[in-house]
Length: 230
Image (tube, rainbow, N blue to C red; front, side, top):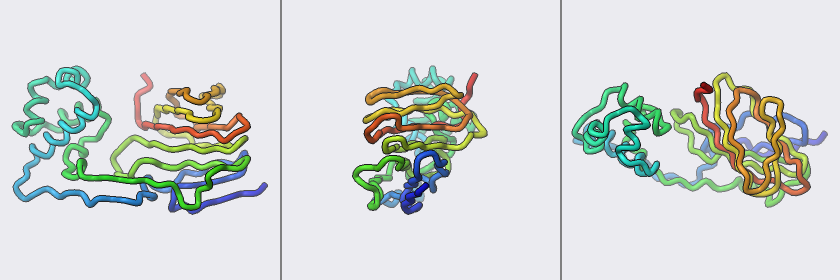
């Protein structure tokens, strides 16, 4: 059985049909443009940094203060004071807010979270089209060592298979197919996901995706680790 392999440093791994996909290199290794983060000024205090980051993230999620208060269990008044830099929240309060918004406590303390502009380009060796049994999986997130999230682009030629190993913690999977059709195995049950369809599921088992069509399949998968299955 033949094996095609592209460079690890560009996130891509190809193997012939039926062979196991191996964990890719750290996310973001194919970043081609990076704007150096802005460092905090000498007079910038923690309250201002936390407040600016909270306001930015809340707006990105399109949440009002009232809605975030309901989701996090932190009062609207406290959230408003934090955003304005008038109050420095406790670790517990930041943890509650972070859980609601999907980030870690340390994220709020980063002075550079609003100062990164990234362009992730495909591997120069990536082909325009894949042959039977060939597959690629490319990370679309920059590695920061804190996020529980992974976001990948999947490309599978006819009959190709991609696997990701068993996880020690529960994870939520959102698989969206843009072209072709993929078969996703969820706890030994096969689900066929066609173009413009999406499949959401939770599992600790091995992740398996197979192209069951006669044309190349193109999809995107979002993976969040460490969720509760209750």
